[in-house]
Image (tube, rainbow, N blue to C red; front, side, top):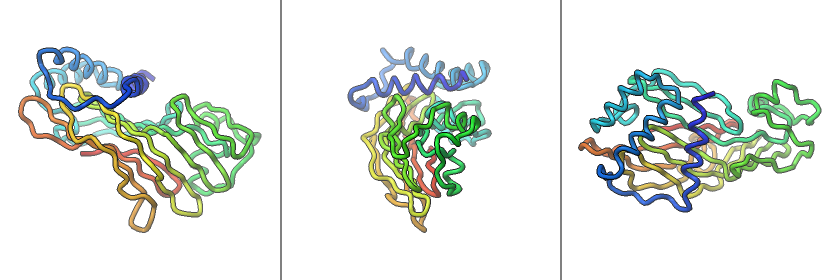
Length: 265
């Protein structure tokens, strides 16, 4: 679908940088036009209407916050699989859109995500149905139980008896003004506590804004009675025009045999 084209474009833009771009002040002399164009492209490809896109760009040109930065409520939210990614799209009251994505390729245990969460025993590749094949993004399940399988972005998954272990999997948040991503390693355990074993240094890009204090942190390493395991990539985003700096973050949450991505700030 058209709205998912922005996902690949943003990942390419982020990971084409050898190192995260240093935070810098917004420079209207050389950046305004290209930044606003980037915001307009993102909104259009994410699925915003032409009318909403124009209204939102007008606000950006007046240095006014939009969407989550303006503290507006979410009016629509849905998650679906797009290839190797679980993509959550959120629409705000002003028509702006933000996208959060978790890279999670098919596991070589013959189970759909829902079946694994429910504690189903592993199947053989022969038992995998067409519907299950489609749910996992059209990927073929390898025959070897412990064979490592992964996506073209570098995320790898290894499955064994009652567990799935993921490494170097991208966690990404995108909006019209800023992007942030990091990679994480985590393990889902059917009869035990899920856990996060590591995260990378975040990569970020800011459009029509400046970003500072960019970092990643594991807030809770292992699922427990206190809650899910949580890793967060965060930064402070400030737009020109004087409105206060706002926290902008994306979290990987792991628990209940499931990994999800959540954003906030």
